[in-house]
Length: 128
Image (cartoon, rainbow, N blue to C red):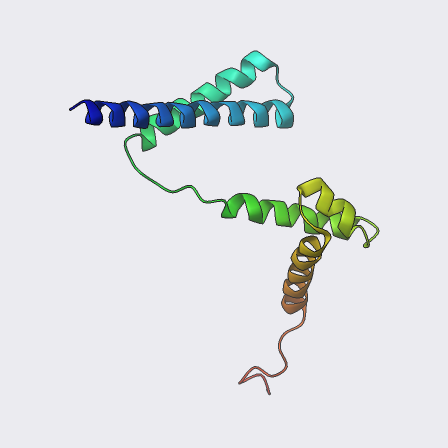
């Protein structure tokens, strides 16, 4: 019985930590993006965390990093396009990545952009 209580307590602490972290992250983003004061940002963070808790509370779900990685990669590509075009090392440093990984991200985005602009000449049925 004591082991079950300890497990419930541990799960509860982890859930509280997650909600508190969410609250802080939302507050920081609102403060940074909207330039609001600390108290307003904290109220918005609390409101979002409370609404998510009410809406998703009790569910077990996995929150992947794909969205954050895709957003980071889009920012890197946009900065590369806007910059001098040879700033791989600096972009990598700004995002905690190696120069090679930064080049890989940019090359993939560039290839995707090229495919959007130039259709494949060897696609079946494209001969007109």
